[in-house]
Length: 222
Image (cartoon, rainbow, N blue to C red; front, side, top):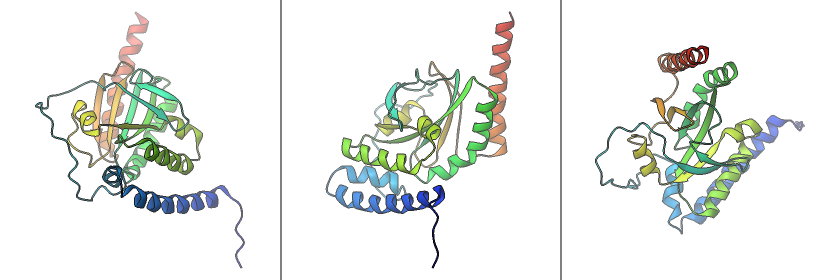
């Protein structure tokens, strides 16, 4: 008989099983409410639900992060973009849980960049429909239980809002891919990309940051 040790890894595996079981229970309960389609779009983005809202105004190029209010997984409230803590903030938007694997490809570079430069910080923003309070609370609990690292919970700020309007403000056409933005505390978008990490994308981000740091140093020396 195998005896399991009470390690953090095993507890994490048990939590994942419990979370998956709870998801199916919540889906069943939500199937009787209008929240069901929104939840399913997040959990299974390939389901063919026609949820996109048609905008009345022609899309135009945008360069500012819209004002939104949200809380991180430690319960701290944020009014963004003003509450981003650094001069330059790398903001990762995820629309489905499948996007996490793409986000993970960026993390080594983002962690290294943040450690090397105190003027840079990165955030993960799950971007979800404005579900009812019960659904939001349940999903937040799942994420909290699935993320044992406190610093990761602190940098994870969940947005519950009109996703189509939010994307329109950022000139994002769809939710098929994760998005990554470089944003100032004032909300100015300095760089934008989508999808998993590549060397070319990473170098493009570092080039922009390098130019910003050089300008900052030059202005301080004057």
